[in-house]
Image 1 (cartoon, rainbow, N blue to C red):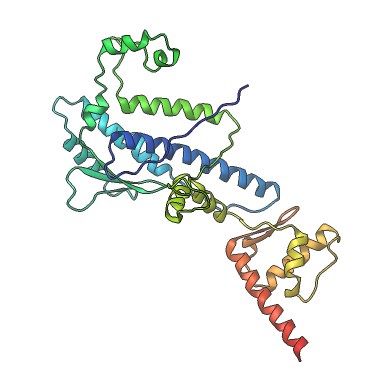
Image 2: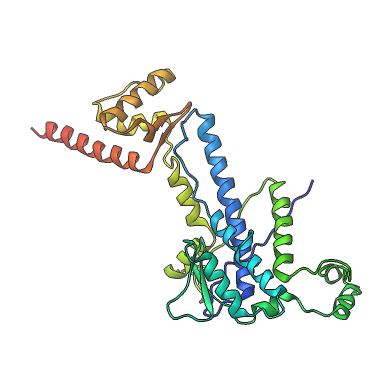
Length: 317
């Protein structure tokens, strides 16, 4: 048993993005996929426990983007293949990934661009320049340098690089990074995770200031807005029966006592939904509360406004 703290990579999108940024953003993309799945599964578990039909609810999925980068025939796989060729080049690598992924919605190339490609990540579309990628991926750190680091008296430094093995298959930087990422996700998947999202409101280091654009970019890149999309894909509005009846009973001109038996409360809520002409799947009765799609809640509010106006008109006569 342990409590671990993971300070995750920050999503990077600079004027010039290279191999390092792709690796960092791959880690972000992988962690975001785990976060999406965990939040969605937890959300759906509550719905199912309440007896709500969720067969039509789909989770926002960035797995195709992960596959395009890290899986077989992905960008890093093609880079490894190009590194293994004696005459491999950065331009040859770029040409091959364009041929392979040009029809992929997560991939793009700027018009007239000769040395870059774009990946449409969950947080932003990032333009990567391929100059020097083969050299960086080959990991040409000499054996003597590795042995020197392994001999360090600092345990952390000594553990950063594996023991050189002349007989072992040489692994590329990208391959090593993917391997570490798999090990990290195996560890995270064995735990009960919690998230803390930190937002820097502005760069001026002064109180009572907010830079809206910078804050929104951080909310996007940290996955907070992705969480909102997940909740919207399900049933984001979940009032108790008592709150639902107290707010919307005017649609039927009145309602049962709030301490009535559960079946009475549920039947009344279904009648309200039917009166508002809402599809039953978009406004469902759970065991303890109502589960409403966003559009169902908006429709209820609109019908409520019309009902209140009707009652007010009657009082004014």
